Amino acid sequence: MAILGCSNSVAINLVVAVASLATGATARSKLCTSLAFVGHHSQVARRQTQSSRLFGGFGGVSSKDKKGKKKKGGGQQTVKKMTPQNAKKVKQQLLERYGGDLNVGTQERIDKYLNSLEPHMREAAELYKSITQFDALIAPMTPADRNRLIPPVQFEMVASDRAKLQSLMEEHKLTEIDLHNVFQQATWDASADAKATQADIVGGQMKPELQQRIDKACSFVVDATKTEGAIGKILDVGCGHGSIVKSLVDAGLEEPDMYVGLDLSSEMIKNAVERYGSARNGRTGKGRIFVADDFLAHDFSVYGNEDSNGIFDGVIFCSALHDLPDMIGSITKATSLLRPSGGKLVVVHAQGAQHVLGQHQANPVMVSRGLPTAAEWSEMIQDHPEWGLSLEQEPADPRSDGDLKNGYLTVLSKI
Image 1 (cartoon, rainbow, N blue to C red):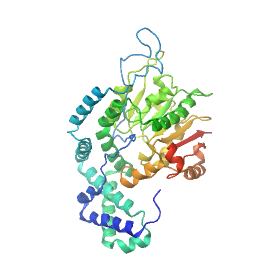
Image 2: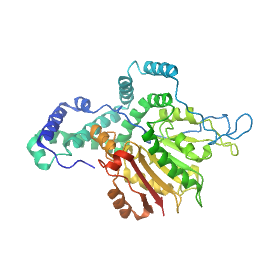
Image 3: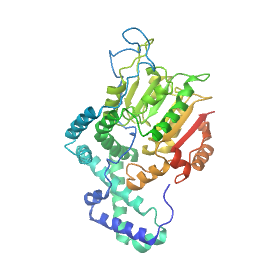
């Protein structure tokens, strides 16, 4: 998804940035756009030993109210926009928790997390970041521009960093996924409180046009739970603080225990449980499951059969797929979790593919690529017949009128 072509002025500006990478990993890190950039959804996480499975609201209310009448949406908590007075109070409390400035406070939390890492992990993460930045900076340049504008010593220094990183990874059995997830976890843990609280202030609603796009995507997933052969369960990958739970309920997800949400950040999951964990299915007594773990590593057999195959009617990536470190691996796992003959895989980003490309350009450490285009989806499906997918709805291409008007939405069906 790299931008092809590069003018001389752009190339020169890139070289100026690359030149400043020459003073060592610590100085290079200052070039990185703050990891606390605005994002809607968090990415799933890698845990060193085990996942954190939080069945929110033990002993909470069931999906019936005190009079025994079943609540709409399986006990969904009411989410209302705060009054101006309450909003002002909550905003002030939030600012106090972040030291008076959300951006500065978030970055301080990120730095604290990174500084708490074991020395070898901290060094590997720093090298990974600087190398990723360098690669992204020169990616738009033609080979001729690179040779003409970048001193050979720059490539030599990056080559040296690559060798150091490779040595650390081999010695400590690290992968690029581990290093990618370091920055994901640091960022989303640091911003979870702010994002969840800001969502509370506006009643969990985005701008109307963006909310409509999310609602539409959720309807595809929920509809899959109502077709012949349905299992009655959906998976929300990168669920964050439960930002689409309300949309799923509004779309007709009938009971809380039909939902499993998975995310990198234990702090995001904590916020999700606080907001959406108490509702219960009045018949089974079970509620929503929120899990802090790496999607690629998580054992899903606990939700279905022993081999984890075919246990969900629908899997949705809402503003999440681009945050995952291995897109092909993530799609492969998602398709294995879908039931055959009608399972739905939905990928949505309300702000569109072009917005994601902007995130990638601003912060390649967090967003390693853009979202797949329609042509890329077709090619991937052809290259991976084991997925058993058909492209039901194609996404609009970046920079197109469709992307601007409708955002990014891909719907795939399990054959």
